[in-house]
Amino acid sequence: MNRISMVAVLIAGVMPFTVGCATKKYTREQAAPIINKTNELDDLTAKNSRDIKDTDRRAQSGIADAQAKANTADQHAVQAGQQADEANKNATQVNTQVASLAGTVENLDNFKPVAESSVHFGFDKADLTKKAKEALDQLGGQLSSTKHYIVEVEGSTDSTGDADYNYQLSKRRADAVIQYLADKYQIPAHKIFLIGLGKDKPVEKNATSDGRAKNRRVDVRLMTNSGDQPQNASANAPQGSK
Image (cartoon, rainbow, N blue to C red; front, side, top):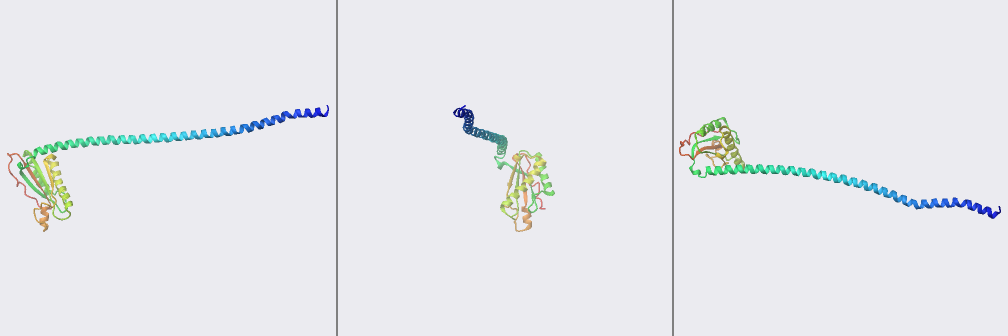
């Protein structure tokens, strides 16, 4: 084989390796961007999946929170409805009692005292003494024989202290009398008139301790508009202060 032939053979033998290496390099160069892009897409897909799950979790949490608030609002609405019904019921009862009371005392001038009593209290006190209860029992004993009656209760104080406080104290004293009579003699509420006079209606001057003691009182009057009742306005003498 001459020299030219040998070169030709060598070239022919080397060419497949050269072409193969070039093809692999080209393939790698062309495939690398695609692989990188695929990896980026995988990362983006994974991130989107995480974001979707997180959004769904927050959405479910928001829905649950909204449902809880809606349930609470429903409960409050039910409670408000019940309270409104109770208020309407109470208003109806009050209106009925007011109408009954208005019919009973529409002509108060026709009511005449059957019995009356005064009970006294200690300084800044609203508790009934034993003597006060005995006086109220004398008056209460006449309720069963008195027709179409009402009970007028006036609470008073001496002049010591703040006027507003004395009004409240006079009402507490009158309340104590009403509570005792109502509990023991079952007097209906619509038959009782309560007046808190504070220091506005003294029976004695407040210049002396004895006068102030006599002004710390509750006056109770049993009255009726029935003409066949005996007049006994002084049945119970005022009780002394404790």
